[in-house]
Length: 519
Image 1 (cartoon, rainbow, N blue to C red):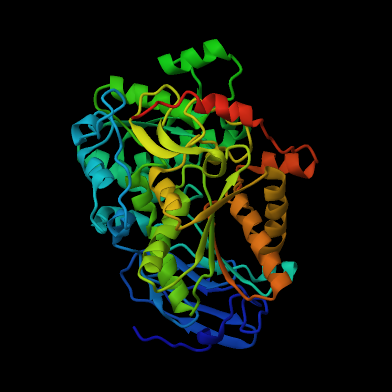
Image 2 (cartoon, helix red, strand yellow; image 1 turned 30 degrees about the vertical axis):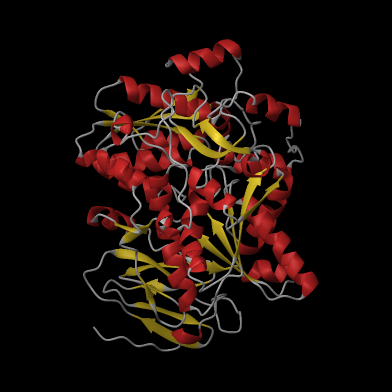
């Protein structure tokens, strides 16, 4: 099939080259030819037949289903990565080992086998630079990958900033976030080893939704413990999981010993990710042919998410941009790591030198107020000990609307990178985050999930600083998901009923006092 380039090379990030809007709806013909009109210029794009549909990003906020590839304004294709990137291979100092919770010795593969399939254990402990993505996983990635890189030109105009703002948007996945990037391979590896059921925890419901989606594809049973605060705030996330066939329990629950202990101490407990992890791990450890899946924190989870950054590097190269600042929200850290780790690789090579900034909620500030120490990943102390920035494994954050960021610890690998000085961190209260989200929604159109509103708020701060200094920085932001099921949080903000939740330092210290003392 031949291709006619037409005027596609001059289509700007906001429609036309001069920033004008798209004048006519673009259509896709049955033979794969994309045809439409931008302004007065007609353009055509065509794609090789017999290739599964993927997203085509043509202009601001504008995604087209087409055959074969994502095409940037200079007609370069961006392919789905076929390898995950492991940052550990390139770090000057290797991260501290994970320890057995009873012996305090480094864990062995056999110690993890009750929870994870062998392939994921190997990935968790791997120091290989690149790990091949199975073809079956790539095939499913094609349902939504590559994801679009979008220039927020209307937000730039609203802020009157010389900065150029780009965001990598993961909300186009079936589950509406970045989480399927790891849910799909985790379920696939479990299925390959004959596992019949998987269990997990979820905060905002994004991870639970992604795992339920992946289990539906591969025919595995899925059981989810959703943090009680989010279970009550986000009923449609629960329904989404149930639509894909998952069983969903509020956490803490009466089903597990860990949950019952918490409820005895506090019958009205809002729950936490640490508690939900304890419940899911308990079920996996005590039920045959059942494994545990984790949506963040662990090395193999961060590894799978690097498809985000690998794509983004190629997309930015295709448009001739290099980021000066990279910003992402952090709870457990998988979305942040997924975008930034490939860029950190390039930074270590001396090719680029971006400032990399993690943003967390002031109600759960593990990087900015936690300590770097060995701690459990769950509340009940059932998991191995990981060296990470932690607020203490029994710290229960206030029920902020960004449920996915309510975790007491930061991913060990991100914590290590932070200690090495390759990134910085700040905490922002939720009202400022929602103020930024409203600006973003009313200029860019997309309604963000509460979690990436933290990245939006930090991006707005940086863009306004550029307005003061006159610097035309390139800001790259991680937009990890949409907020279509988070509208009650927006309602609370719009009605003026949202408050910034804070706590005394004594509360953190009380939790930190219970961290295991490792000599």
